[in-house]
Length: 159
Image (tube, rainbow, N blue to C red):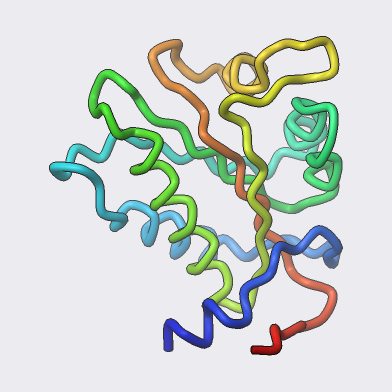
């Protein structure tokens, strides 16, 4: 039930060092592709990053709050092309929460790392750094990176 997913979802920054199974990655990405978008333009692209060196580099795109990505088994970069849709930010954000809820439904954890309008330690745009690391074409903007992990233990929210 959706209510239970929402009630139990947490941002997970402490996690097991295990890899996320390929089948689960595929389900998460397929779910994201089903996300609604304005006028069905689907301006987004999703890049699943499992390479440890790239995750390490991506963990340093911001001065704060992204260090844990270095140890994560998976980071899903959510980017979109503003030329395809004027509400690309909203479309990318909707797809991002679907990634998080899909991960939760599979017994995984996640944490949103905001990229758009954030800056690195030398005041460089975090999105430009992500685009450089992953060779994302210039017309795309990066909204966020969703770290997908295997949580240490299940925690639930009290309501």
